[in-house]
Image (tube, rainbow, N blue to C red; front, side, top):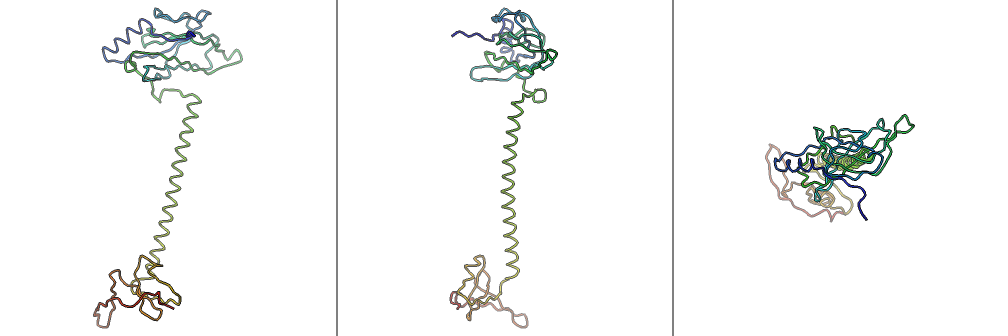
Length: 257
């Protein structure tokens, strides 16, 4: 099946693209125009220097690489609803001086005027194969590009997904921070209530070394358990501020009845 629609470089376009490759200065494609083809669907020719019957021209909305491997670029022009009253069958790309660089034929469509009772915001795209995409200056400045509804919706969905991820992360971190703060507060309160030297009496079979693993306890008999320093020694002050070190002795409170 033969191709019915195509886009090609004009002779002037090929010449300027080759010059861009030699000079290392990217070719600037700045405008697009559409026309009605004089009433018939035209066949693009490299000898063209203009459209058969141009109806509308405007700066490109964007010019981007569509396929890096195949060296295909995509030029996009947006037609507002105020423009219309003609058929669209052909399109062309121009540089800033008005030189026609590429031509294409398009599926026939009518662009109505608002005065006719209908209006349409229309996006025209031309896919063009070049020798090297590096030889063409891209247009992708977000400050001047108009976004389509689909692009805005996609960007909004991406932003929502990102925000949801951030909120979820913050919620998890907040829960962890609260849990950590509560644990720290409880531990600090416990330490204040149970300094080294604290004596506890247990009437049941309880081992405080298992219940409070961050501390060290020694059973001293008669259901009494004493918290000692980590070294296994505790100090007892006597009169005249003399300090004596006594080795920890006794058995675990597991023996407590």
